[in-house]
Image (cartoon, rainbow, N blue to C red; front, side):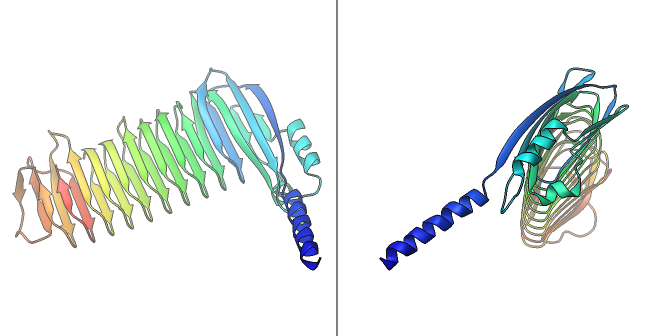
Length: 303
């Protein structure tokens, strides 16, 4: 009998807990006529953000609202209020999406956005927690996430990405790129001229098609860099291998050191100074911008 009462009490607690944590959801859709070039500013405390290119002179916004957590009172009212008056403000050619009073965030409000904007749009977007994607925009584009992966595709100009935890994938970047992650893999494919900077506390970094300077830092992880060093390259990893591939006609200066592991190259190098184990200094095709490579543990390959 006592055991049955205990099981019943546990079951009731489970049901009450599940109800307390139940989510209330809703959606909204808005279409706005806008001028160009457009400045788009997006923010959400929790939720994903997707921004992609669409027709000129028009922005389409789809929002997905969720209110949940422990002991949320008036959740339906909160959702209905946001649906009736979404956080969208248009002032000339500046469009702000997602700015809510602090009281909403205290009630565990999460809004995810899907935004279709003209290609001629400059973007700044921030989320406390959630993934972000942007594609087909002229740029510049700045995306920030406290926690979540970030993906960029076919950005015509400069791009900047920051995430506390999560991978960064940036393909088809037509200008300079800066990316940092507290933890996560970073991959950048550049299609235009501009410097590239990428740093992660833990994770590999891969750069392709670089046409400019490059700066890479990773506490632990491999580094791969491919392109033409028309500016200085600095590639550093605390632990991991480094592989560099340069354009066939590139002239540059090598300064490579491996704490544990050898340095190998298929390039014809005019050596400067004495040859020492685990390091190489010299010039390729008469020298040029310095390609500086450091690894605490791992081999270095230069092709």
